[in-house]
Image 1 (cartoon, rainbow, N blue to C red):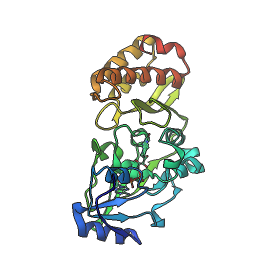
Image 2: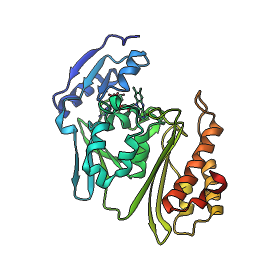
Image 3: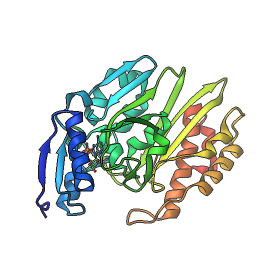
Image 4: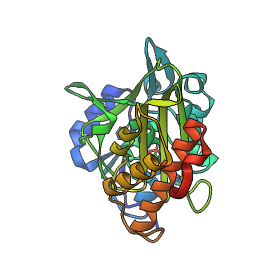
Length: 292
Ligand SMILES: Cc1cc2nc3c(=O)[nH]c(=O)nc-3n(C[C@H](O)[C@H](O)[C@H](O)COP(=O)(O)OP(=O)(O)OC[C@H]3O[C@@H](n4cnc5c(N)ncnc54)[C@H](O)[C@@H]3O)c2cc1C
């Protein structure tokens, strides 16, 4: 199938893009890498009147460190995240997660901003944003606003963005000492969207977690930062405590059934991921126990 007829405008600057979005409201759609938008248009799931192509706006591209903040332009491609030394140094979780996003051809075009704005609940990168405590930078004609990633994702393919707004950058606080990370997903094939996945970051002192952030994806209508992780902080982690935390996680999640997996299977896989992450982060395989 082919997309319905649409008008096309190539924005010359952020201001130019914002003018076009404000003028056309819900009838316009932003085009970044096109890896989600174009398939959706070709399948006629959406039929925008106008495509606003932001692909040529240089100020939206690139990775930099500014003081204690890692700033990533919205147009930074998945493949660029893999190459950037700033990402390897300050957000290695992101580099590891990107390797699970689709395949090289798609990673060469797809962008971080596009992935976050698209808000597929099975996507890897939104979950990483929760773990890394990222701030989403949003601009409209009336100014700029900043929002915690935890507030940005609102449901399946839904975010806090309005039709006249552009996601311009992502800011990640850096400088956490001794942070270590874990990433794993269950998918039918490498590169497929996950059936259940987990991005995690921890700070460990004297064998105990002083901080633990676990963000699950593909087990709800948006990425979920698990409250159950709090049970494992500043305490001696035992196999019984891991089982207890996994049970609490099961209560917290509300996965959906689809052709890939039942709700029960997704909940089970999330518990397995939780136990594996704790064991891996602490370097104590015996903690996986019956949960995994
Ligand atoms: C075969 C295939 C497999 C894939 N597998 C995975 C996978 O395993 N994991 C995964 O996470 N993704 C996967 N993807 C999606 C891919 O990662 C996309 O690149 C990404 O979701 C969207 O990025 P994009 O730059 O291509 O955005 P686009 O397709 O250009 O846009 C996506 C949506 O976001 C909006 N948008 C884009 N940029 C902005 C912005 N700056 N401000 C406001 N709105 C904006 C657009 O209007 C559109 O609604 C897959 C895609 C394909 C085709």
